[in-house]
Image (cartoon, rainbow, N blue to C red; front, side):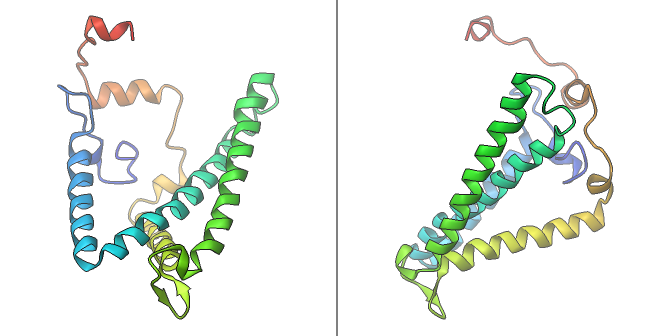
Length: 183
């Protein structure tokens, strides 16, 4: 995402020694540590509810991503049996299952008994956490759309992009250790 401007370019930096995202790993770790500490200090139950709400978000994001794959490959879906299976059927079934689980999770999360027992107006806290974080994601997306509209309006992925990314971010990739080549 850093390469294409969805987040600041610094997030795209790769450690030349370890070949992993350096800055983004540090930022993600720090945010996670602060979040865990704050939520645990507030209440152990809130942490439990937050983890339960994570399932709602995972189902939603991966479900819509599966359908986005079908849309991305729509022009080549039926060119071969392989394409039908891997570009159409697998994403279709995967997306349908995840959206189905998402719907079930919404219904279940509204019952306070399916979390820590905490509720707001008789509706489970897990429901509010799940949708609150999804809503926050929408707000952040809209802000980013205003800041970097090209990411949302232009084709940012081109043939050969993997090579460009590798050459841009890690100009001198070391050869893998010989024992890793056989794995």
